Image (cartoon, rainbow, N blue to C red; front, side):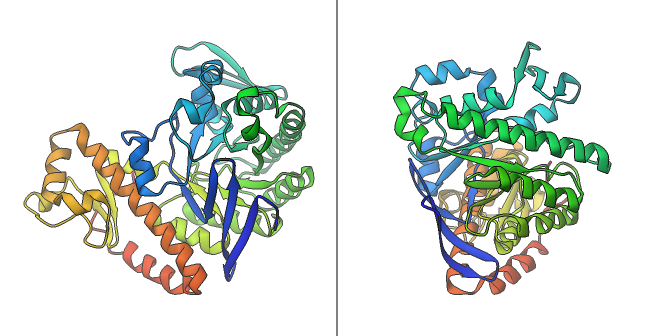
Length: 388
């Protein structure tokens, strides 16, 4: 046990635990809703609290551009700015810079990029990305990394991995020298946790080397990054399985950008402690809803006169009050309320799924719960693939 992370229960490789932050304890395994620009789209903070959200993810790149680090600093930090008293994790912005493609130039010093908002030229380095996150005051902050493209041959993936390792060392050095430079939030910044990120593309040996080099630098927690970037999901799992044995067993493990409801259960079963994904919120805006019986596309005509709840086994406020027919009507009418209610339900489903995972681990019933989740995922009534 480390003082900020305690493992409490085990069921095979899976474990339950507590991540202690300045803004409250987080029960793990945990799913973190994505609030990229200091908001989970369409859902106010009091509703997120009612849903039981323990920790949110926000993004350094987007907040760096708008409203700007200095603005948030002057307004008392990210927690006060967005009126959120629970934990926050900030991504370093590495993935967003990677996704800009033609608008970026990456070199040893850092990444030069043009804003997707107005085309203005900006620069993020390991030092500036870390400085921004210190100023934001998030509880968990991430080292600046280069997300390897998919597909990538071994040599480009190796060079990218090695630069990520060098950047990680620079992030840690800067963090240790400057972590107490925000007077209004000294209790927060003194307890901020800087996690390292493992890269290496889709090459198991590079993943292993990246994990070993990142652990050697020394961080309180470790993330597996650079996945869910277009590769087959079987390959995603293969890379996770190749990485986990090389991460410390007593520290938190964070799998970035994953996944579907069944995937978060599968990865928790492997020993992952933290996950985030835009899927529940993005899918909700496209009318794709997750239920105990599988995916449901609310636009389908079969729901036009369906008086039943979205999911009879769900206790969220949407399922307790509204019919499938009404939800279909809102979506078909392009009403804003459709996205709001759909998002609330999908988040409730993900959070409830993770609560059930924690309970199953503690009761030693994870295998049975995993089998149930797998069977339900095969009974989807939705048409087509998950929205990307």
